[in-house]
Length: 220
Image 1 (cartoon, rainbow, N blue to C red):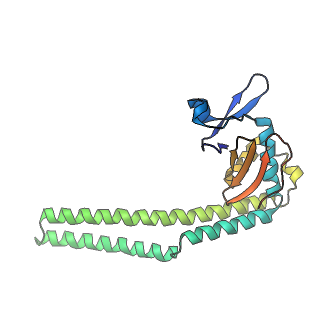
Image 2: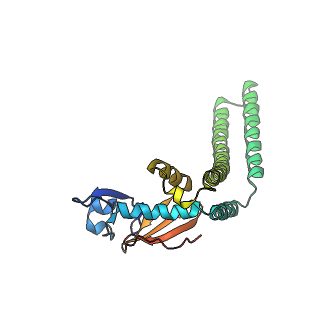
């Protein structure tokens, strides 16, 4: 859970005998002037509200599917160049660098290039190699991100597609945390007690108020 005012995480604090409360860590550590988040949120009120919203999503797999498609489109729009074509270009660049390296070493061995010249050329090639490998890693990370996204959502669909909301309520805290992790769940808390729950597929799950135990409808 994060503070919507400053972006810092919310920590839990025990207040007398009333139980655990979520509080802004920045305000706790640096004083009341550091953040406007005065609200203390009861953990035993917040957590059921969040899980209710998640349960509604898991009870409607089409929401997950639509979110996945939105995320795919967003990722593809961010990368207008064909990833595989670009990857091939960088791999060709690495091969070219290796050939040049070998050629320069042959020239030096034949006495047609001084050691200083060879060192300078090899340093330039090393920088070019590092740049090419960096670009390939970025492309691999992008592909892996999409692949992981698809895998996690499909895993959720397979596990929970036939489970009703009532059965989801029986999941253990550890199982719920696993679901939160797969969804990339983020909860933002506002000073008026409102909570906004978002997930990695760029869709808002719900908007609820901690002082009310009734979540409103989903906002897919």
